[in-house]
Length: 276
Image 1 (cartoon, helix red, strand yellow):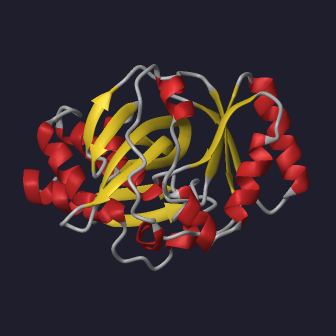
Image 2 (cartoon, rainbow, N blue to C red):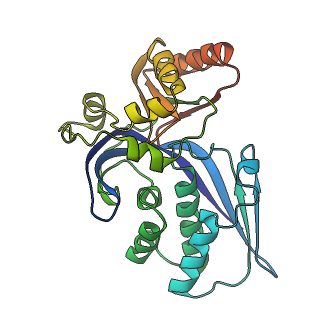
Image 3 (cartoon, rainbow, N blue to C red):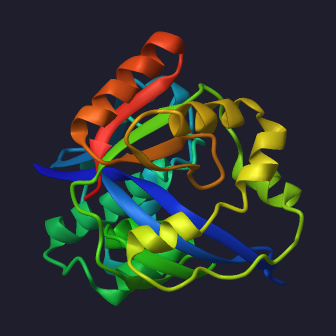
């Protein structure tokens, strides 16, 4: 049995610079990862099976082109069929939520298959496969704080904010990436500045937050509620939404904020974690 964590990804800042001829957008982003997320488990089997468990399993029911299966297929095409496998995805992250759930699952699948076949997790060929699966998959395969440029696949690892308390909040709406990018106003507001990771994040922004708020106004309510909590250092939407995050000075402050938000909005999804 091989077990790989697929940790949640957050964008501490996300600056959109321009639209590229290939349809993607030129980005500058600060990737960070949490200590919690989904889990991929691989077992050798007599026939290939794929199953999904966990609180968000139903959201993937009947999905024939799951990123986990695509990752396994591309791995087999590049390195040879590893044989029949029983693949289990334990889904704890909401889908279409801006925290890289599907991308993290695909990356964890690649890491698990590399372990199964004795490959190095930093093999450049794995990153080539990751890029073919999606713009966030290389960052999730790296799995550590980094500056992402290009469409997000060009990664420069940076010193992280390990163990910084984080609270994720999703108001229960799914926001598709495509419409959010299409609603971006096209204005280049400049790149990410210098400094350590926290300073760069706090001086930065998420250029996709205004268009995401236009599509799902409740995102503004989430950010405002997070910003109002004692001990918050930074509150912002992640990725293309609708999940928002807050970094806290202490675990106690994060716990108090989670309790306050759960009481005020019992239907919202919350995850207490810390940066990896």
